[in-house]
Image 1 (cartoon, rainbow, N blue to C red):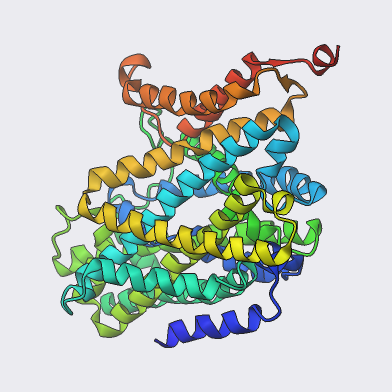
Image 2 (cartoon, rainbow, N blue to C red):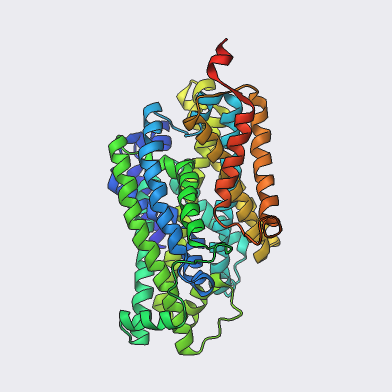
Length: 478
């Protein structure tokens, strides 16, 4: 209750005299260091909160190579994409595709983002609710749909007026609670095991958990695949994602936005390293206490050990951290989807000149998006199994490949699309080809298995498809 009250206090202060510009751009007055700190929580969802520590059991610390790739990706965002966005003074980043290629590209990029974010963020929210349901709310007799309704309603209410300006400030609170949960859990385990850092690192090394670089090129977590995959995941899922970039575009100017991105990158590397360390600690704790985790899903290792063995205080901290991670992912998405629908699909400023009507339309869309969030969560709960979660998240990730290809073609090529009507078909065909390549990669490529680098292939196929339906600008002008 106290946590929710803090969110609404922040909402009240940040949404006073709010206008449509406040909702969509934060009036471009956000301090860069506040945005940078708050984006930590936004980039680390409830899935990451549980998955990164748990995955140490199966992939050791090879995920850190993905984090190294993040650094390269954020350099591209800071010094290639942000200058473009600020030069064009964009509210929705997909407006760039409309300026470059026309309405078909604009709507294709926006729809790809909307579908991907709606599914991905709603399901991330569902996983957070699912964990809380298992360990807390089932015992109280509260049904999952009611838990989801309450949480979505809270997010709807505190983002309703201030939009992105409110989110920039609530993200700082959520990041603080999430990092507090991470640090406190780590301290509790160290004290319970009564070990020093060198001692626990030695134990992790003996069990094989400290491996960072996978040298087998056929494995999905081969270190070069992970670094390249992390780089392009960052470019596509942050730099070409309205949810993440909308926060950056609230900074006062380009220089502040670049400061924000680069400082955020440094913090993100440290935080991910701490999550991996926590994963190793949890596994050592399980070995030392005789806890059988051999048949436990990796996503459940952190909550199972916390609720079962670390005491009430650590459990409360975990719940607050998990809720913070879930809220910080969902609230930004709710606002970003509303922004994309208003600017990319409806084109609110072009077709609805009256600001009072714009506000009304924006609020209706905001509520409808929240309802869609709730429906996705409720429907998915009826078919929940691990395989389905993996499939849906993979499909959602595929949608960023065409967005990557569209932006890359626009930025690095001066060619013009001759048949814009074909753009949506190329954007649909590219993920289908990638799915086929991923499914049969071992047969087609001598045992090679795709990892995160499949996103690069996805974008490249879209790029080549656009090249085939394009002509040189001079030819078109003639």
